[in-house]
Image 1 (cartoon, rainbow, N blue to C red):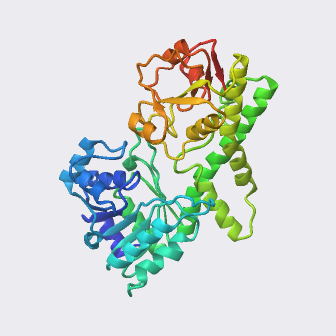
Image 2 (image 1 turned 120 degrees about the vertical axis):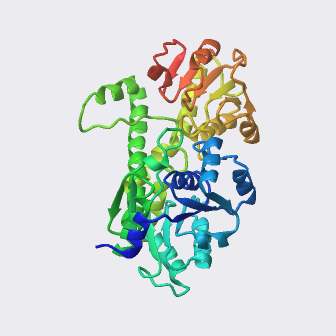
Length: 432
């Protein structure tokens, strides 16, 4: 089955509209222009918009050069939502965090829905990309798009297509396949046609709910497997076994195994959060998510376990945590990014501060200003590290000189297996 609007999205020039110009929305807007489309990008922060108009990107995966090229090709950042009425799509890429009680904070999506309600016009596709619980698109976006009298699948089309970005890696938005699910079959076909102009392949599912669930499965799968390997890391330590050697050995099997690695916890804006959207929705349905709950229990206790292991190492040197100078090496939530949102590194360091440790941080990507604003002393890359009692590697940036750390600090606790992976042999390094 084809639809005239789908044919238009597939074959004609059109203007994309993006609501939210953050880690997801800005790369999407830039990619749309790279694919020959015009783009209107709306953000509620005028300072962000002014910086973008001046050619200054606030997102690590979009360079200033790429931004300026996008501006030249027809990217229009704005703080005026009324301009979105000129767009043919409204791609919604706003934050979807958890609230204080680890329940979904829907305020950003609800605010975006109100923007849709104000500006939506006949012929537009409204597509939510923000991670959320199954049913959000049907419950929040459909009313917003149709309350003014527009008819679904005739005047307006509504779908969900989960964001897929990979910060710190070279895969761009335009290279990553998209999952798309319409609230109806017609909306799905129209959304599939629109996204096919931006990404290399589109996998359409039967409903927006299925697409919402697919996104949660992707990151719940990771959270559960990380929880499993974190538990095995603790058991291996008790049994005197090198868990990194065990994982490398299992990974030689060419089928039936995918390697996951232990660490000081889980961080970022996906893995710690997305399973909780699913768990919250399950509780509403009176369903117990036992794997999710157990994985979260293991993963959220890893910072405390890491601090215990550090205390154990310091005791072996005849020192308590109290008063010891400890260097945190890397605090971003993943390697090679400057993003420290939801980073477990800070949980580890706060635990050590609570035990009286004197903490400094070396992270050239996150940067000194950010570290100082978080309340920590920032250490320069070329600083003398000999005054520290112990270093703990929390994030393995490629830019970090781990050999220099091991050469200057008496003891190093490697929570990421970084020394083994780089082939660095040092007698004073202990792995998680």
